[in-house]
Image 1 (cartoon, helix red, strand yellow):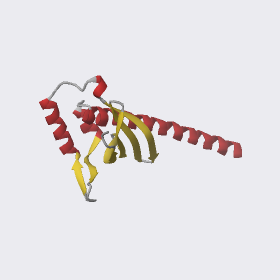
Image 2 (cartoon, rainbow, N blue to C red):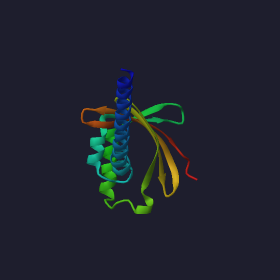
Image 3 (tube, rainbow, N blue to C red):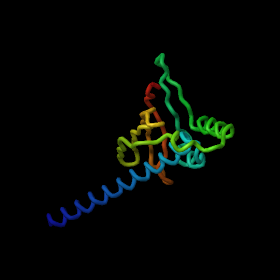
Image 4 (cartoon, rainbow, N blue to C red):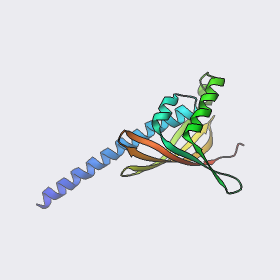
Length: 150
């Protein structure tokens, strides 16, 4: 009986680890396409619309300690205007790139800590909150640290 229970426990643990790795890869793909590609590099904003929950807010901490919210629909609007003004793609060497520092998943909730780089310099550390909805993972919130331009 103990062998059966132990075997079942091992199978459940293996399945859980496999499912979590699949979720981490899905989250990386989502962030890469919807956020880095779509918003940071003038990419496919339909991917952005799919990957961000409509209730998403970017939370901005101001120098005076106050905080502002920047909803996703405003961010997409400004990204569209930027693309209309200059539809050419971002040059290869000037694209924002992303490193995944950490992805932590608990059930249907996740947090991703990512570092963004431009021309070899770290420009942001972002903390993205995500929920898994019936149609997949969606980014629901972002806070960040901006590195000074040197």
